[in-house]
Length: 488
Ligand code: GDP
Ligand code: IMO
Ligand code: MG
Image 1 (tube, helix red, strand yellow):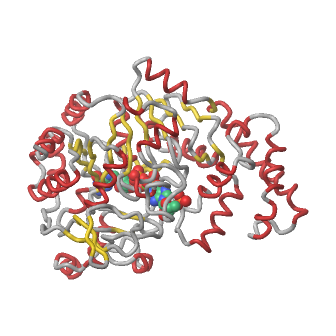
Image 2 (tube, protein in one colour; image 1 turned 90 degrees about the vertical axis):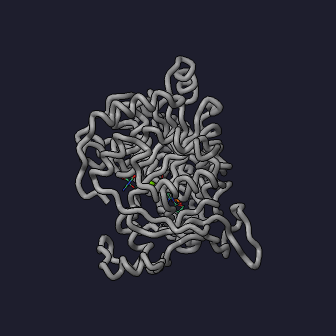
Image 3 (spheres, protein in one colour; image 1 turned 90 degrees about the horizontal axis):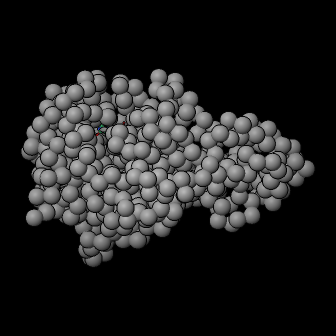
């Protein structure tokens, strides 16, 4: 892991711009696994060449971390392109927490960046209300999905149910107070049963309290509210470029993910088309494949290293001893999982929970490529695997059956690992700077072996290899060319 920030290389920047110009302009970014793949870093990087960056799904359950000019900024609602001074849109299918949105703006400004572009929040986006957040917390006690408790599920439920839902449009127009009252009245029984309201006589006062807070947010949000579907289609028509920033990961998709341990929105590239009302045939799909999968919250995870229970008990940030590292190299999975978690700082950007870590899973990646129509991978955090030994799942088995397909009910399936064990020496800061400058060929041989197997298995080439949280420390030169050769 990089403890200090490497100086930006001017050469790397020029090189990157030349190479990015060869890539088609409109891009959809999707997470390949269960989220936290480093989408934020890649979106921030690619935003340099986009006119608009657009969030199309999820809500403030997302946490996208950007490291730029030695500063770290975590965004939950605002798309990452704002640090590059680009226009930003929040689409109509985003679950919108006004407070988180305003906090994101504050976080950007407090970090010393200026928001230079336009920000448009689609008026049709559904707002997350305080009772949604409380209901999420209460429901969790029973369901044990391990949600982020940001109110996503309850807001999605109201949206689908269509009678008590509230939108940004409702929030900024007259009659908002009345609409909150009606919603609270309609949901009174549930709010009482779950202890969110103490008595049925309280509902009017409860609604009024929400109104007082939310009407203040409304005043701050009014100027951002607008319409994004015509806007973005018109912009594309006029030759402007769009970068669509997915939140969560494909395996958390409400339809194609590991239900019920999923989120409440579409996290795939197809979801972008549906959510924004845009012709995604004009887009390239880049899947963000973290070099190893992680998962926060509950749910099946075939290649998991160690157990979630133990991960929760671990002391955060405690370095491994030399003896422990040796054990991990000799095959101790529990310790390897911890080692990856510590080196990769695998703690939730939204909830601070430890992320479960696993061996790479080619079965999951191939499935992810299929359901998204992934054109290319951006591999992230591969630096974290340096100096460690690991394997990659190439099939799953259960009760004497073996499959290369990702089972819809993943519970109980065990990984079947490929014969290869991967290892390369950890890259130094100088190695990283060199690799950015010289390109793919300068990456460690063992790393390239791993990438080759991943490309061959998934039949998708790689366009960039991220080896640091920092924007510039990303290898692009020759990556697509070389990894496409693996497919010949
Ligand atoms: P997202 O939700 O997909 O945007 O990912 P998160 O921001 O939640 O988690 C990814 C974490 O890894 C963040 O802390 C990033 O700063 C960091 N990161 C991204 N790419 C790299 C990389 O290539 N190497 C390392 N070491 N860290 C990275
Ligand atoms: P980014 O965009 C990782 C997970 C939660 C839980 C499940 C349902 O940063 O990759 P929810 O609160 O959405 O109802 O929780 O989905 N989850 C994420 N995991 N990264 C995310 O976002 C996530 N957003 C939701 O941990 O398992
Ligand atoms: Mg995240």
